[in-house]
Length: 266
Length: 346
Image 1: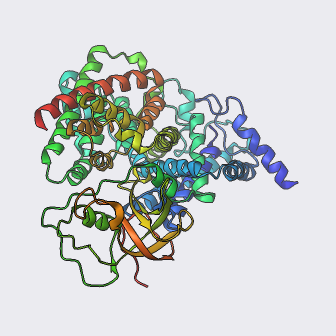
Image 2: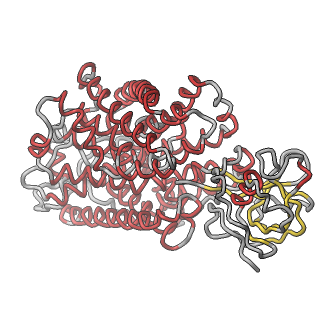
Image 3: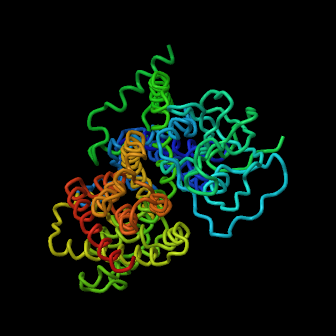
């Protein structure tokens, strides 16, 4: 593969990583926050590699201006000569297979056409994430604020596991995005959670009754009480994880969408 | 007009016959109009991508692109670490070091190399180039393969993640450690017994440091070459994993949870096609709560050793003949080892 193609691929990949991690928050659509230093470092290393390769190619090209392939340069920086003479024995570092071209797809995608974070399409296809089991007396008394800000995971645990039924009759506020329900009335308030990158995404969902569904993927804050009409008894796994909504307001999409955070109080 | 010329030359570059066959071209510097060529190479695929992307702005395609990019972005830093390490081993470490560290008899070197996997903190993408350069430095292939298999599964980062994902069951961490080490050692011995050198691509031979050359230049060129090479195959693997991820909904997965034997095999296959990074697979395994502990152990033992992106990476580094045989054998050995170890410990 020609050297300038290698330069191009390295620089593009480096710029792509730097753009997504250093200059914008777009990396949060794909990986977790903790990856940021690694991504910035990788982007910088790739950029450096590309610049070094360009510099080395330029140094070789200059004296070779009288005739391509001229030997005898004393450039310690370029081992093309050495490889070329006995490349049969060697690991030939100037030959890169065509498959390396594929690297330009993610690089260009990151630079110019970054796909959005996963949303209702993914959430509607997966079974909801199993929430962690809370120890028998692990439930703290709920704070007295009303409406009570709560995460979707906490709400699910309270509804399904809290035998003290502390959530009963309480007005709660939750933030998530809208996933249309396939059948029946109501819709899902959803969060997508990732443990490493978007490839292992799982969703938590709370079914919302009583208000019309906003457009899919809209981020909303919902206020309401536990939906007792589902048939199951509160505090057991038969209870419906659902909400009778009183109000829905649109909110900004949070920067880090793959977390189950409390709603911002307005 | 300028732009036309620009794209014209840009098109010709990828198609140039033999331009990138290994070592075929005489050493050339930058071509005369290289900024134009570069701009063409940069703009043209982007333009095509946007056009294709606009017409396919379906949610499914967007999810595919997001997952594909997520796997790539997540793995790139570790791939970079692995290729840098491999370049450094190639350029700076004399072959005699490995001869001194590893036992002379390959049968003994295999378990030692497997246990040495503890020192490479990263996921599986990093271990392929490192194993390749180890072979180049005269380490017995069997020992290098034991290292390749065990490193992504037994390093402290991954074991810590496993302990966090399975709170209150330290036996899961122990079972994962044991099953992975045993699988790695068995595969190393299997290679000693049955493996043939001709399955390995000749290009796998790294040359190491040569007198009269700058070590830094050798490091840089090796690093760059390995990264570009492995990076391309990483993208192939990421695409395959994303395709499975989007095409098969999670609810289908849960349908297999009931039968104990089927669930073990199913999670083994799932680990291969999902291609989750070994630092994250414990969390995924923990979330597959409908499955038995043995099945989940199998998921965590098979995943770091065989998966789509690893097969693609190995095919690129060691050759297709090797990757197919080695991955198939590893998958079988890993399933057997995790069932045995899991049966005893869990």
